[in-house]
Image (cartoon, rainbow over all chains, first blue to last red; front, side):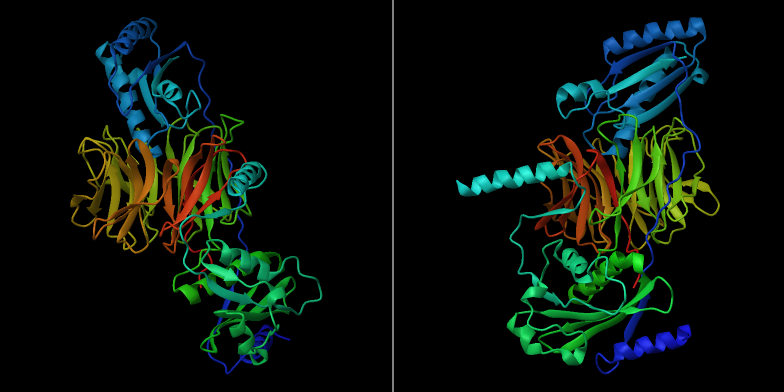
Length: 155
Length: 435
């Protein structure tokens, strides 16, 4: 039997349900998906130092403890000609993409303060991880306060 | 007393099964409407080999998923017709059946293929309302069953069924802090598989309108970048990367553009990416945070989150006039809005008394309804028929990240528990089996 004959035979079967009106013919396709392989995997360079500055909720102002930290860090960076990577982080409250934006504001605030303290902008890179890399897991203020932070990594 | 005892048993069952399976679980919370009564006669099986699963069981499970249908058990039937002339409508009226489904599974001349012929009949009108023939592989029997469920749903409810659709989500297992996994699953929790794994964050998956590709953000290069992955092949391509944030992709309805967020202008703004020319064009340029764009179904505007007024609120931009209008005024945190398919309603994350819920907002009347009562609700995604939403939330009992859903009328809730304890960012696919 050719495909066409087979098709006709089927139409006859369906039509036998009743007087033949419209019959929909469709094909169900296999739902497959193939995983992709990462082309590059980021690995952190060996760090000279890593310090942390904490922030209050939905805010990117650096408090006095934070600015003192940045000030002393800036002079070390200048003396040793180090590169700085600033990572902005948030707590889990609020939406992920909004927190990604907020984390960048935090990282930029730190970068600006480093520049004010004499570090060349060409030695600074910033990245925001939003709420994706919490320091502490847990849905309470104790964890949240640890997660609202900027990490200043020198290498 | 007895009732609370049962409640405890029920809770224990829910908690224990969280770790055992990722099957969809339904909880009817609102006073549901009277379900539509359907009978599906076990299909006549005209093949030599025995069936691996029964179509009427697949369809029953689908249709009863969201409490809109009650499907009669075969043992309660009075007759078992497989052809229309064999139907005694009296039998079905006695059983108070509204709709009857009959059919046969037939051999195909093609090796490994089967044909399913079936009809949907309106019992009160004694009328055949739909006849169809589905062709497919023996191995895809379950998908063919979902396809029949979709068709029944559509013919009876007037809106497409979503039983063939899938959910993309990001999985971050509790046991491994440095593992991120982009996965897809059928909506009943079956066929869960990995699309992309990384030791760096993955976020914001978004389906292409034809359901063949997924755009997402990966930090695999140490900073955010948008990728597009083709499901069938696993091939992926990276969008042109700019300085700063590259995130929040949203596909245009015609599939030619992505809207996304870049912060190369020193603060996050909404941009358009032309997928043919690989060029970025800015849409907004405010000094505040603009993020989380979503394309309107007609392709003419976008909604996005902006803190230009001091707190995150939802705005709409008309792409041709570039006019921007604020849409939300209630509360101090409204973010990550998504259009419903009608373009007249949106859902978003709304903070009320310090708690994050998912809100439904009618753009014409301004009416706002809170749809969820769980904890830290985020990332809402709308089913392609507009009838339900899925979102990410925290299960406070187990302290795990789970996916939960609710029908748009708020009456039926469901959860899709995660095996690893870290499911997040669900994205509901478009209708995949077009009919």
